[in-house]
Image (cartoon, rainbow, N blue to C red):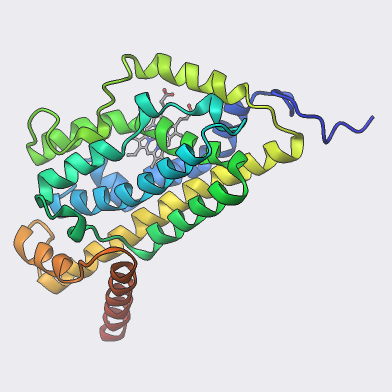
Length: 273
Ligand code: HEM
């Protein structure tokens, strides 16, 4: 009997939550070890770095959560749709307003990798909502895991009080991250997928990690460039902020401009070297 088209909540023998963790294990190690994340863990993240990271997270969650809302009744989304508990967009808006003031929207700048990530989210939201779970898993379960540690490090390193500037890491609707993750995994496991669909979700999860790694690497490049241009270590807030602000406009134009400035400067840097 051909079972390839049979939908099952347990298609390949082991459950989706176990398979997804196994296939992304190496990618997780790579993500943790990107320079940006490694610095973060060591308490070496600077305020300009942290603000830039929040900008990219804002763009990513804006699209992710829009696509989840649009597809909330889809059978592969409905079981893992937890806007009350998980939605990050309002907390990111609060954090950005805290750092950039009321005009924060004009200050959001992101590298090309963030733009590629959100394009993929839009595409799967439109054409393959089955794959959204790969992205929600990667981001939200990460935020409820290592993200909890990173929030505390950010508070300490940047001297932030209460939830000011770290609302992103705070989940008021989740009493116990550990128990919530268990619930989330069981909901993931209840999604009915054919073997083929399950395989695509697993591939997409690896891709989701790759997108995140790409964002961290691009942010690091942008920061290195601005630090070099400022002629300092990156801990001097003013010149770095000035240059980033200079390439800050709104939306698509700013992505392109930001990417061009970054690439042109990388090119010049390599040439000079
Ligand atoms: C500084 C960087 C990071 C640290 C220290 C870290 C640490 C951890 C730890 C300790 C866990 C296990 C928690 C548990 O078993 O309950 C975990 C799980 C997880 N992390 Fe990370 N992480 C980091 C970065 C990332 C990044 C960048 C992503 C993705 C964008 C990510 C996604 C995940 C996911 C999806 C899980 C859940 C795994 C599962 O239980 O299936 N992590 N992380």
